[in-house]
Amino acid sequence: MKKFLLVMLVIGGLMMVGCDRKNSRSWLENKFGNELSRVYPTENLEDLFEEFPDGFGINQTLIRNNHFVEIELYGDESDNSISGSLVMKDLSTPSEKIIADIPLRYERNSFTLSGVELAKEYWDFDGFLFQKLKVNSSLLSEMKLKDKSYNFQNGDMRTIYQLNNSEIEEYLKISNSKKYNLGFGGSDSNRGYYYTIFIENQNDANEFYFSERVLDANN
Image (cartoon, rainbow, N blue to C red; front, side):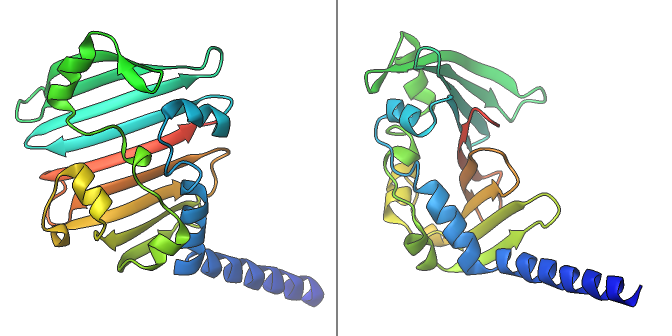
């Protein structure tokens, strides 16, 4: 019995050491850096099929000036098509009224269909952030870390930094970067690829919040 208890204590101790390691800044930044570098940067969306041959999803969300904009695209492995929609809601109305619901299609390195010009009225970014930004562990290690976490029960993890990146600031058309946090989120327990980058006003995320998520077909 004593031998069994000793073995269990040793195993428990090793598990705690492993958990502490995963909650360290170096482990989290290596994990985020290695995984995000698979996508950031990818200039042509169609090249994502090389990384995710079974298909993928892209989700981008923006909250600004009482408006909510969400773009969802799906890469279909059966024909290598990329399509989805843009939805805009007015958050100042009790029902969060839908202002626009526009179908989108991406082919030959650009968006097509008649709704694209209308979509640009609500989504004024020049493409997706992952088409512009290079992310790796070296970049993360140079930034000012504000918070980090690793959930040992479900594998959820995140790091939050003080925003200080000219490419992101230029893409989002924001100034005074000290007002904003830059965060990375993911899960160590997912079967496939599922990672998010988000930027938020550190005092009020309802004033400004942006997120971009790329996931593979296993999620």
